[in-house]
Image (cartoon, rainbow, N blue to C red; front, side, top):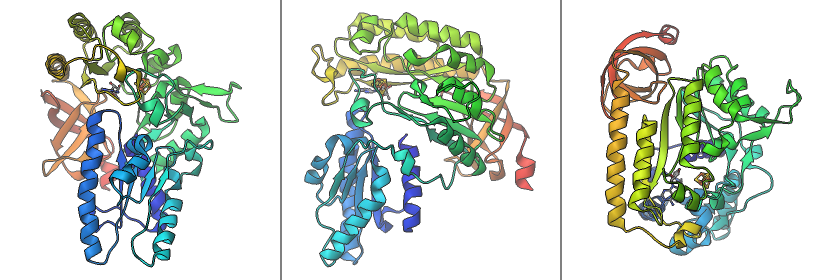
Amino acid sequence: MNVYDSDRIKDLLKPLNYQLTDDPAQADLSILNTCHIREKAEQKVYSDLGRLRQHQTNRRQQGDEMLIAVGGCVAQAEGEEILRQAPYVSMVFGPQTYHRLPEMIAQMTRQKDARKGRGAGRGIVDTDFPVESKFDSLPTPQSSSVSAFLSIQEGCDKFCTFCVVPYTRGTEYSRPAGDILQEARRLVELGAKEITLLGQNVNAYHGQAPHLSSHGDQEWGLGRLLHELATIDGLHRLRYMTSHPRDMDQDLIDAHGQIPQLMPFLHLPVQSGSDALLKTMNRKHTAKDYLDIIDRLRKARPDIAFSSDFIIGFPGETQQDHQATLDLVRQVDFAQAYSFKYSVRPGTPAGSMDGQVAETLKTERLYEIQDLLKEQQWAFNKTKVGTVQSVLFDRIGKVPGQILGKTPYMQSVPLEAPKRLLGCLTDVLIKEAYANSMMGIILDSLESISVAA
Ligand code: 5AD
Ligand code: SF4
């Protein structure tokens, strides 16, 4: 979601004549869009700020200015504290107020002029949760990647006891369906072939139906929205993340069997396989509920592959709880997964729970689960060797001459191939599978001819 927000910030600043630069030393304005989900992400902000300050000082010595802004969830959580620790920062804004950035820049510029060029003065902090949605003030997207993100929902009312999101992103909000359809059409016009719908709790989506909704319904759920998006010409792939098991309703499960554009891959975080921990995490479902949802999804779309998030070493986690998580992993058989050591977040209930787990034990358990998950991922990749996969090449690879794409199951396929295949759905015969990627031979590219021409 921070990638989506950063793109919107870029669109907001375009009319002010700002352009992106790859070189921070050249920047008139540097914005850090920050994440607060775990402590490590938060610590990174202050070390990045230290580096930016060096560039700011160098520029000042050459008679140039650099405004520094901190946005995102660390800004929301820390507010004024950022200005105290880093007084050279000019603007601090939360995830719900970044649409006001042009006003903040104008205000800082006025202050600077009033001080006759002697710096911009004291910084501005804007960490409101405005009643009006920021989405109403954002410009339409000006550019799109082949694989685009589209925020449809934000915030969360679930209050899992380990999580800062309800405090930093605010309460749950769903964008009106008509606005989403319009933005999706625009992204496709700009070259998107795949759209990933985003939300902290994306499947809790319940947006206002467009005025002319055929069934007279007032609100659409995610299943209904996906059906409508699938009618957009030129939009070949749809995905959504991140979902909560409790919001996987039947409409959405059915959509997986009915919509060919909806890719057979779902990121569905479970966090733990232990019912006792799921309860203290306030997840409001059991391990069996999760396994039942997986079964129903597999019935609807037999080839669907799953990914998940796991928190290891949540307060009170016993060896038995840990085994229950390993058991769940074995039962589901994941194609991919993310696992994290529990990180205490200030102000969350779990931070002050008894039974905090020792760091060494967390590390030991994390490695154990990661070994199993890696094994499963590699085994899943191997099942595709000898098959033909449709790959959407969407970026330049790290190795010169390579381009990088994804199969429907989110597997990475880096191949030496001409750049004209970027943006094309290409049939690739998979020859080899590795833990994190797959190699193959290009058989056919449906759109390369028209793109090359
Ligand atoms: N510690 C560790 N991981 C966390 N996550 C959220 N909060 C914490 C925390 N306090 C993980 C969850 C979530 C993912 C986005 O980040 O697994 O699904
Ligand atoms: Fe955080 Fe997701 Fe739980 Fe909401 S549902 S509190 S975003 S982990």
